[in-house]
Amino acid sequence: MTALLSGRGLTRMFDGNNGCDHVDIDLHPGEVTCIVGESGSGKTTLLNLLSLQLRPDAGSLYYRTLDGARIDLGLASEMDRRRLMRTEWGFVRQNPRDGLLRDVSAGANISERLMANGARHYGALRDTAIDWMRKVELDHGRVDDLPRDFSGGMQQRLQIARNLVTGPRLLFMDEPTAGLDVSVQARLLDLLRTLTSQLGIAMLIVTHDIGVARLLAHRLLVMHRGRIIETGLTDQVLDDPQQPYTQMLVSSVLPV
Amino acid sequence: MLTMQFDVAETAGNGLAPDVMIDVSGLSKSFTIHAQAAMQIAALRAVSFQLRAGECVALTGPSGAGKSTLLRCIYGNYLATCGTISIRDRKRGAVTVTGADPRDIIALRKDTIGYVSQFLRAIPRVGAQALVASSLVELGEKKEAAMRHAAELLERLAIPQKLWALPPATFSGGEQQRINIARGLIADHPILLLDEPTASLDAANSAIVSELILERRNKGTAIMGIFHDEETRDRVATRLFPLQAA
Image (tube, rainbow over all chains, first blue to last red; front, side):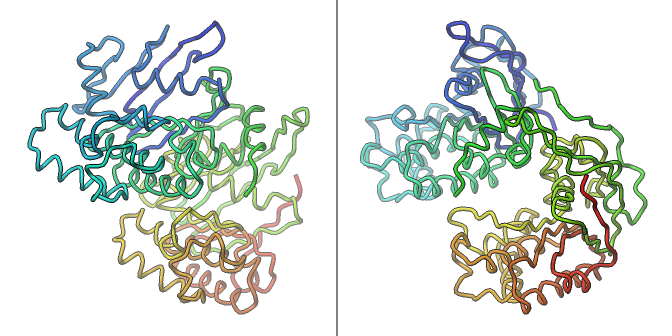
């Protein structure tokens, strides 16, 4: 199977030692990849490089388009990059405030990407928004409420609906469950698990929560000091870690 | 990107004899404990065997002989240090587990290998029956049919019906073990790996599980397991494979 998005030698350093240092990575359709590692290991930098929010100092990024062509995103026009980010990719942010439009309703938040792609029929947009509220288990009677009237967990689900509405091929998530109560986390994880297996999209999740990674990820990448130091099948990396840092990381998790 | 620390022999296991389901050749496994000054713990040394369709091989040997480690290496949960493991996949023919990409292992587990571990890993919010049904749903079975099949298995394993809708995290050890068995058996995989499937079961429930294993064996499933309970072992095993501490 060919990769959807490939990074080669991706490098972006801050203050000379923090960031991302010559990272090679492949994201495949239908596969959930988790990046784990401590704060400052470079995992969010890598996520931002892959999702075009950050330009690399060095390295290349290749994307497989719908018609099977492989394009170099470093050479793509700004217009093409924006179109990708708006239609074929989604980005769920750690803090829903950063990923939602504050002053428009839940329904309008969900429809926004469709409208940006040219959809104009109000009734159809509203029906789609209601349909997606159901899919992420939100009360669709609240389609006209503002995001701030929803709880943190509900806002996170709204953000997911807003991103999935265009049927993206690739979804980036930065610590999607951080800051949520455990019961709310479980619901969100269950939703993500179901949606990914139904939709068959590629997903990259940055998390420091090993439990989240074990539940959702097919493939695990361990980052340490800006480099990917270990990678493999999720349960293999967690149950038989090879590198000193990974062994330390895994043995530091509190058993439940 | 990552320097692999193990030595992977790149032999494609295309030469599997027709009824051979698993071929293990020169398999060694050692663990390096970096927190203990890179201490080496040898778990398996140069293990070779073949498992055929319709066989049930019982792994024997003292605690620490590497019985669970062997099952985990076959399942792709542990990396082999050297040697090769080839498996006859339902769709792809012979697949070499050692050195395989994660997605190949995931496909093997979906289509070909059922594994019953000692402990159930529950999923938040997923009820027992849905959890058991999920491996069939993954194979493309319709949800309703998979749930019906799961109900039959749970009934046979004497799990009270009032528990079926509940997530098994709060079940007793014996109940969790039986959910785990139902989960491992439901998809009718051609290969079954069983790590002490009857460890926390009473005599009556052990007998039910033995019966289920025998049915699979008679249908041609290739089975490898660890059975501490001698009565179960004598009932289900066609031969023993002794392991010595490495």
